[in-house]
View 1 (cartoon, rainbow, N blue to C red):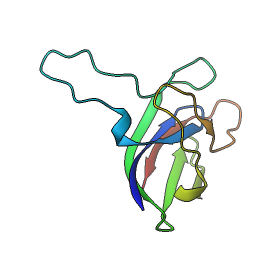
View 2 (tube, one colour; view 1 turned 90 degrees about the vertical axis):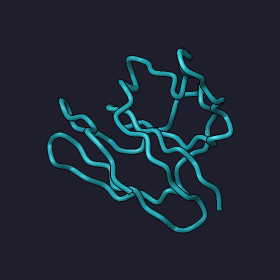
View 3 (cartoon, one colour; view 1 turned 135 degrees about the horizontal axis):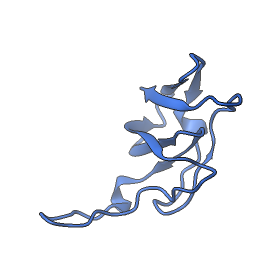
View 4 (tube, rainbow, N blue to C red; view 1 turned 60 degrees about the vertical axis):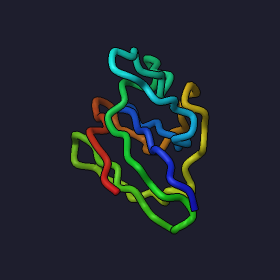
Length: 101
């Protein structure tokens, strides 16, 4: 069991990232990249702290009212600068608006 950051984008991509990959920032710091945003992935819409290895699930919902419940353990673990994997297939004109744990 490990705490991870679940990052989900507007176009249905996501990944798990270890918090150890993020360095601490001091006041005035510029931040660190948490997701390689592209035109295909869209902007990040949710970052959620989750526990792996516990059988937990995440609810991903869209602007058109669709929702899926996905096991956290089935989501790929990637580096903070890498792109994600497809978590939900979207219909034309739909987008992910949020997620709940």
